[in-house]
Image 1: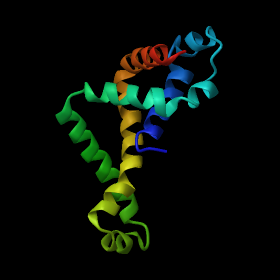
Image 2 (image 1 turned 45 degrees about the horizontal axis):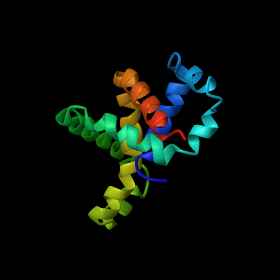
Image 3 (image 1 turned 120 degrees about the vertical axis):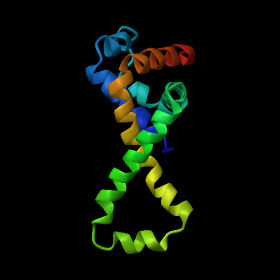
Length: 130
């Protein structure tokens, strides 16, 4: 699973469960959430990245910084984690943090941009659909 997959999956689930008309749109086409899961990487990860790329970069940077501090703050208090962190090189640290940060960022972006995600996710599926 890629770095952005869990964020795209989280948004897809939230749209399906709580965005009016989203699930109905797919039900009308006889498409289930499970069906959509099979095209997550191919269809919805690029859609997630499209929405994200059109947002204010400085606001995204600030949000990512805040999330990173939250994620690390919780981990640094766990016994032994600080020693492990100190042993890792920068690449290992970055790799370790990328997915949980991106997933949390996806959740937060959904809160402010649900309409945009719904429109882009549907358009991405329509463009993909055979």
